[in-house]
Length: 439
Ligand code: HSE
Image (cartoon, rainbow, N blue to C red):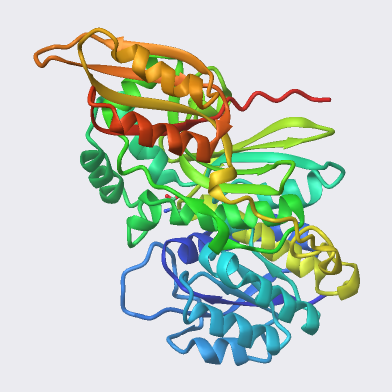
């Protein structure tokens, strides 16, 4: 069979990584795909920029539309990122009956339902492994490897920048700002780092993971998202004293009333494997009813780790070029006509445990007032830690609670902050124990 022709849109970090992997491993890749993969065209905004790949043999252009209109191209590899013009180009490619491989999480999380619908109508595949957790094959693992399971929950460290920041704060006592600057200098952060630190990048990825885990539509707008900007080195130290690490987790969980979709800083027991995922590495813990907990770990970003997933998708798509469109692996793991409308649980109904940190006046009866509030709201306390005052006449009080409904905890916080003995706002960070066992 002759070569399959691909067109690459975007020659940035991942684009160049993809060119390098396709070139270096060409023989192995063609043995897997059953035919050679030839880059028929590559599009970049600026053709004179210095790049980390050899472009001398490439047919370069600045005209992306000419690539998606090129009748000789079978597969478009979209590595531009962002919503526009990526969406317009991907939709045009699909209408031209070209298959698409993309690493674009925002595109899939926000426009995926429409894109997959259009792809289905035109009999083409849109593959997106590289959109979540870089080089970890988590989409394939959930969609195909765990297809026999009812997935109960997943929890992931799915933003390397945020994990790098929290690791640096814990390991070196760096402030949040120092750690962020380092992450930016090392090239980990997104162009706009608020996407990383406010959890938007993780929410894009969680949206995709939840859809394929539960067979629900992509619902980015329903993900509760909280960033890590307010986490202090002091919080990290107190968590450590109690045997926990603070991680920025994306959590998708089935409950009796629907699915919880949330991204927020989370205390997890330090003995869990996922608590020991450090720096820019990513990991996703998936809990299936048959398999029990599985942990998927690897590089969540970077040129070649992400290219590894892009190229795997290219190989999959090339293999599928000759297959019946009705018998391919469904985009969102479940057949398009079997997507479920399980409701997304509203934040007030989340059920989780909490770590609370408050500055209290150092005088008799304060702890009794605090614990009375929890007792009256039927919130059970797991542990209390009090730091003796250093200079002022206040003491830092740390409380770990057992699981409760979020709305009940919000009531407790209001009442705590009304106590004359509690200074300032009470800091609250959710706690997840992530203790699953196989059935
Ligand atoms: N900025 C992202 C991260 C890159 O830090 O994980 C990969 O999506």
